[in-house]
Amino acid sequence: MKCEKCGLEIIKEDSYEHLGKTLCEDCYIEVQHVPRPCDPGAVYSARKTREMLGQKGSEGLTPRQKEIYNFLKEKGKATHQEVIQALDIPPQELQKEFAILRHCELVKGSKEGNTIYLTVMD
Ligand SMILES: [Zn+2]
Image (cartoon, rainbow, N blue to C red; front, side, top):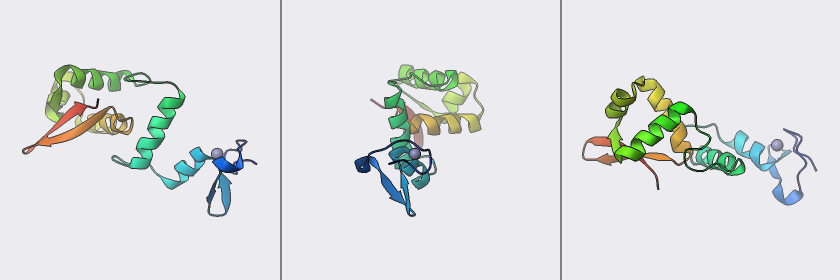
């Protein structure tokens, strides 16, 4: 059988029903989840893509994402403001890149008192 969205050849056990259509796992995830920060589906999908490509750690990231990731790894933790100043990143760009890094489960935000720190995940 074939995925009705992308045409991929799939076996019955790997097929999913969505609105009367047979979909492969990837297309099923795609129609189910529109990526948003903190979306478990997006996390799953980003991790799966990276696994498929055999990527670990900061592999497969853009230079900007690597820069953020390496900075946090070196510092241990840093506030948004510290990252913005140290790497000279516009706040909106940091927010966007941070959301992607979080989808890949490389970084996370943690709250200490009233301050939110960005840290790398183990
Ligand atoms: Zn498909």
